[in-house]
Length: 397
Picture 1 (tube, one colour):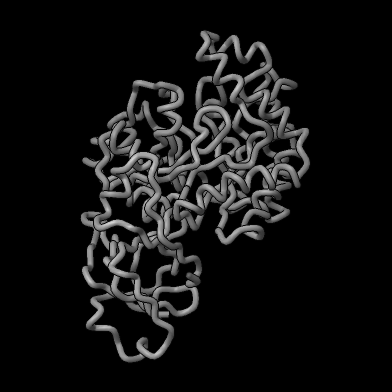
Picture 2: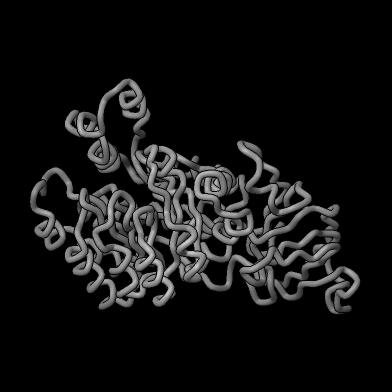
């Protein structure tokens, strides 16, 4: 297939949009074969099917590299309770918070979890997403963690989207292990990880390194198992405080450190040295009404690639709009439209270890978005507006 009459946003480097006016893209199967000016299309690509895109903007398809889209129930009632004055502690003591999601997820059938997850996945697809990461972590027992990961694998069979899974057994300490996080790691988390890996359900291993979850020593024990299994790592780190998670992610050469609001200049240097991506999650920052923004300027100075994601989850970021996440990153964190788009494409791909995605270049995956827009800055500029005209997934329009 040959796509013509397009304004291309190639993102072939990180320092510009890589715009090509009156551009063309030749696709062979599920890969990009050629990119350039319409007048320079090689003869070999002129004889096949051609699609005139009417001068529209074409970018790589979007990538949501941090989601929790598989879960049971919702926490809208808690949202209302907090706005009526209840504290997080009061909500939790009343059986709310992550405990309520764990209870609902354990009780839900795989079929119900999949049907519910697909409503969120459809919203992501509708805004141009072609690849998502999906985490476990709302089971906190072996059976439910495996159930969540099996459902995550089913998403790609039910919809035209690629899914990468992350095992997040080290997400929280369940009620039955209250006060015994190390015992939970030994008796549930690590055995569940081994079982999930044996079943082929795990693409990466994640953890929540925070005062309300697990410390660096506990996460390191999980990461050591990940290393022994040959699995890459990711980490929720420095969201609410700084207890050393980002440094730990760098030590292990993790694919990404996510949230990172309380990361320091030293943390940024460590990420740069390890090649670890900083994943910025403005949806949680907004929902929790946080005031400590991630150190964007330090990431720039030290050359840390910044990815961007929705963090779609029932508690802290019920967000299913990557375009709104881009706007939030620019408005709340002062990222530029170029940084936001790279964050949802090339750098998001890197945060998942999917290096052949996120740019329009020969050899890259033929996952593209066609937008009713004249300039790429429009994608981060509007609020609550979706200019997607068409999505190309694995070379199919």
